[in-house]
Length: 495
Image (tube, rainbow, N blue to C red; front, side):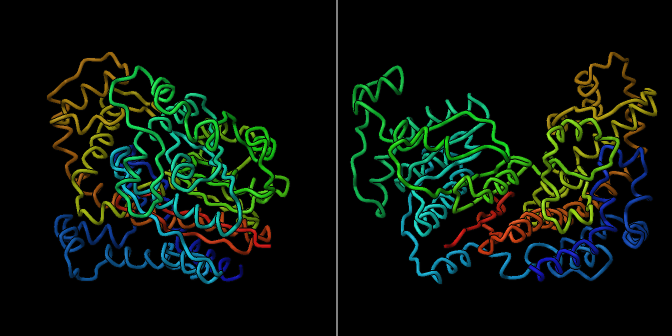
């Protein structure tokens, strides 16, 4: 625990001077002159002297010459998740090595789900289902609670492929019903999936229909009489879960004949503070939870305790109405009253690996420039000073020119005003330099993103340590190029 606290101190010391970058929204980049006010002076001076094209060409080269931008990126990497103690941060192979060191031999199963879901979801569900199955077998938990189950992909696979009893919990009834229907459809394909795999016992789950049925229920009534998992080993409930929810009665109500007294709690991309809610549920002894595997997402929707940004005040007040905060959760950072800020948390939700792997700076920054320039037009040309969080959506990629973008944006903002195309064209030409500067700003934010994400995740891990959960770590489960939110908190209460 002390090693983790020491590393968090080191990361915070590094990050704090750069938080103004992370908390600067690109909408106001031009109008608030962020180039002069938040960009580090050494980077700003070098870009102004050498030009953006030269600096970026060096940055993207295979053998860059050290300069202020490359040095910033290099020093930042010393504070991302890879820099934390090896006992706190593991890759997937390390996770399985831990299991084997405990005397458990992992399951050897593989299959392809490409017929049923997109590549990203297939990758996430396959990896996480196997991981959960292995840890659940080791922990002796045969009932798994899937919080924020959504479409039910993970739950379905745990029930069908690994024969677990699964309780999917979602706050929206439409998701619960959708998960049920999707699982029924999944069962229809499962026989084919099993036949294609050498890793499964060749059970015949249900026949493939030769003629068309009006509903999946009709299919099962005609061909297999009943679903193998829906309503038996996989059940769904609609429940808004808080840290005060009592999990055990929900399980007992759905699995009445089960005599097990310890359960597993999992969540794949639990949104905002639902991830920390899962941690708080896990440490409560009344919930009888032995295993936790949680992959969080949507950091910008976390209820942060010490935020003071008036721009987001109404949003934060609405999120914080129940006074149950999602950051910080560790006593160590609470005592410091540490603040990230909403835009910094939104920065943590970016996909830097994709950007740095593709070396594409044009595609992601064109929409940012258009939106920042639109703000200038709204304020300077139209005199609209009281604009707050005007959301125009993803228009830029649908527009050939900035002129077209302005017309569509004003329509979306429901601003009935005459558009002077000549003025717009002059504005575009005038601020071309800002487009180049936004590219640098974008790289800086992408560089800070994994540091902020790491801080959020390690705050959660430290919270578990503080609660006496010693067998806990952050693990990188997924390919970041497929799944940007690829880290899980894994925790086990060992007897």
